[in-house]
Amino acid sequence: MDQELSQSTPPQPSTKPKNLPHRSRTRPDRPTPTEPASHDHDLDGGWLRPAVFGAMDGLVSNAALIAGVAGGTQGGASKAVLLAGFAGLAAGAFSMAAGEYASVASQSEAAERAIAIERREIIANPEAERAELADALRAKGLEAELADEVSRQVHRDVDKAVAVHSMEEFGVDPDDLASPMLAAVSSFISFTLGGVVPLLPYLLGFPNVLFALVLTLVALFGCGAVVTRLTSRPWWFGGLRQAALGGAAFALTWGIGSLVGTGLG
Image (cartoon, rainbow, N blue to C red; front, side):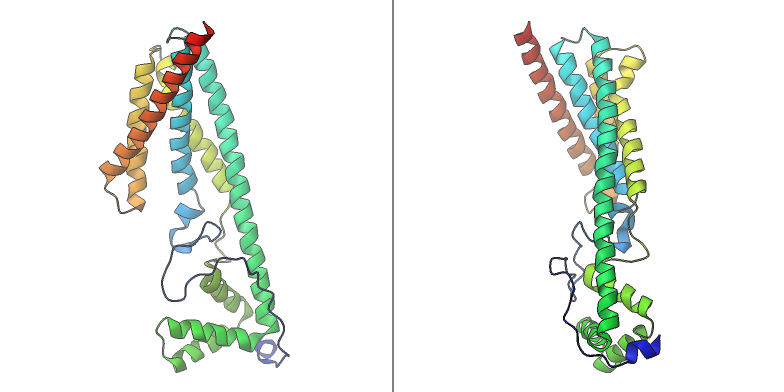
């Protein structure tokens, strides 16, 4: 492997994709959505992000749907509310899962393509790639001699060199790519759990849209508070913000449903 890397080869034209996002070498910027970040993998490409946001989507969309139907029927058709609620729950859960799978799969495939191109570059132009890594290390504060030595040791092994270059240039860890299936299943389950909440009063024999609203707002507050654990906002701020947004969606769709129901007679 050392012999392959050290062998002198004529420089080849770069084949690295021009439209791939490039990580800053001097500051730890957050990567774009096509860059899975290894330090917070659960948020960007694992189970936590699709689970939390799937639950909030299920809560808001299904509660708003129930509110619209209840407004249109003046709250007097619990069977219609249940039918619409379960139909919306099923449609939303499958839609969320399919969309999340396609999104994460495309992200992972783009990362795999970038990694493959980087591997070809390292094999075709070992010295140029080694110098590029040394430059990046010097930009991070290493002394020139130490940066050269680290780069030389990394490039003793092609796989290690590919991993280091991929993380440095694209923010991609070849051994920790996001799982499309995990994201899809997380979205499906969490959306379903969220979508069931506003239906609980109707299922338990309390067919009142106000009960559905209260349960939904409490659940949204909890989800919003959980999300703030990953941000700099206080828990109460995230909870109130999410509850306010969900309440606004609930009120708007109830009003629209009432107007449409009145117009239809």
